[in-house]
Length: 73
Image (tube, rainbow, N blue to C red; front, side, top):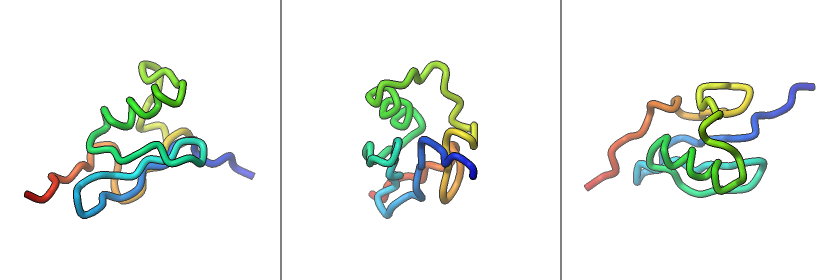
């Protein structure tokens, strides 16, 4: 049985944010990859050694780490 990714980043919501779940817990809403790294840091992980494109660690739903729509004005 495969081990699920530690981090799940959900599709963008209508405001342009993406919900982030770390180890089964909601970490918050991210508006950029920098926000995701900050959530990882707050969870006790070292953002300097984390590869957000590593599919064994991060599952991106609704687009990868380069998909961050502009929030509506």
